[in-house]
Length: 263
Image (cartoon, rainbow, N blue to C red):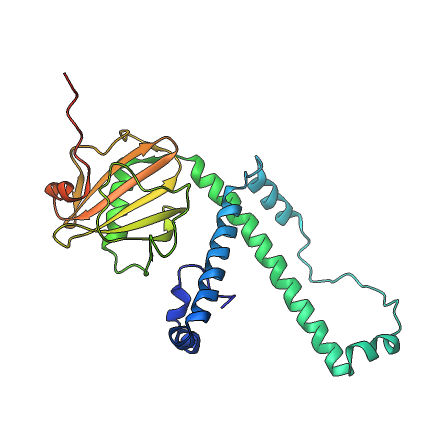
């Protein structure tokens, strides 16, 4: 359970079918699994909120370029008597097994930390560059029409992250689920999957960043292609992209109609 990524997508792997069966048959195990998933999401969210030092990506690349290409490993002299260690670890075979496990664990931890550091740096570089509203709309429709998304969480099952809030410009339909969307123009977004009044499908993508050529509320005319419509707008540091099945009239079932000013 601890190696499953948040979102439950790993449970569809045939190698974890035994775990999916156990979870379906054991409510207590389900609760433990959901707690682990929430913990992973909280840790990932905390890492995303850490400010990235200026110039970090350039320093990482420079440091990697400066590393020697040889495969030599520094020699470490043993200063501990093996005989005194063997009784505590067990047989020599057990000692070697423990050493291998520590080596594998340490190597994986170092690789994961390096990958995380590089991912954070690249995320900051991408986030610093604003995206054009028309590009966002067209790309979001491509993503929306690309196939079924992974199952999300119902709002009463797991609350979405507070810094990716649902938009007050979008109607709260009877069926709303949310999920992480990690491939949204190289950014991390939250996708709210919606069901319209007539059963039509929609998704509201929310990410932290900046967009150009977009209003501060849903525009009257959407971007339309492939039988879907997209509205893009920005509120403070949040960019919203709503994609809905159908033409411009689909806005009536998903977007809050702006009120006329009082005279």
